Length: 127
Length: 348
Image (cartoon, rainbow over all chains, first blue to last red; front, side):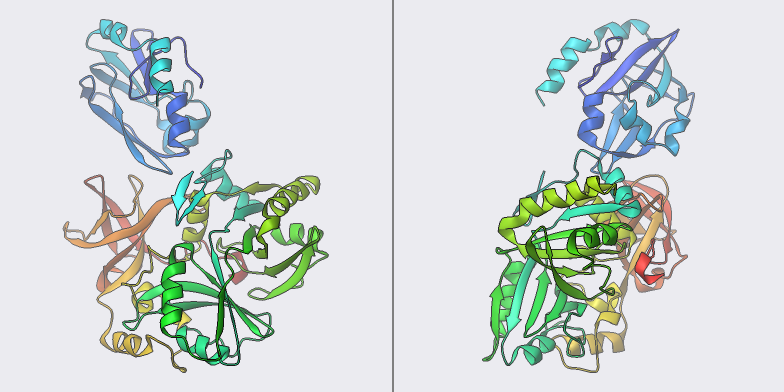
């Protein structure tokens, strides 16, 4: 299992990284492996606001559909439109080109409350 | 791994379901399908007995012929769908794993003197070799046994010294064969075919259940328990072509009544945008009224569509009808389309 040491995590397998004044979010290597081939991604339009823990999108694999959860309260700046026709990018490069959303946080300090790479590794290894 | 009719079977191999699907369409997929059952029918009364139990005209089959047939109950519902091979003095019937017991009970309750029925499933292993290069691969390891067969016929040959029955049949929409051989040679032959593929430079990969499902779905083939069940008849399912009304068979009278009265519902293939339609999802008309339910659905890798099969009100089943599929509670726009989404290569 690959872990991005610069990201922080949710138990539900979303990663979040600082990106200038904003944040970028995707799903972990553990999650993409468990889901299998990703075949559909539904992401929000820019300007939408979500509270921490609320569902901002849906990801569907050959096996099942899963909600994507907002790691921090914030407003969508952009979604990764490349994924619409090339969902396999999520499987191939989940911490890079397979990102989902870029957002500005209501409170950037909320990032500090997320799971560290080590904490997330322990959580996901138990699954 | 997933439990499937008493067998532990891989949903996918490390290659991944989508890539496995593409490999089968472009080169060779290897399918470990030992879960399929095989029944051998012999005896002086075998021809008439089996013909009276299945929907297709099998008496016109010559030795070596293979044919699709349905096993129907008295109401015309589909107990199982079968592939029947005719060999000298023997009918070799391939049945679905999950229906072995139901089939056996049905056969037993209709048994007559002069028929010798033997379930040879445990002694028989079954591997399918499917894809545009499957014939080249099998020819190379069998002294040309596959290329000499026309579609829907079978022969015998040795592969790696193992005596095999080889049918030019399959469940993917691609050319290829299904190979039957003694079960104790399973690992040996599986490894041999993969190794020979590699040695000959023919891309060959093992294919799991997920890709097996998307391949057969695109090609318009039914999966028992989904498109067809004991509560679904072949008329509404679109398999009237597999029923020969010029002969007698169990379920024929019911089917004639159904044809006469017309079907209230029909199987429709529906393409959807905005998510993956899956089994159990509600199908709606433009006004949001329920008109049916998906029996299976998925992303289709070759045609690059999201689609499901659903039983809907017959009037709504006509290709080109605007419908919606409720995906996780949200109606997503769709349209009924012509089957198959992918025309099998041997029908072109």
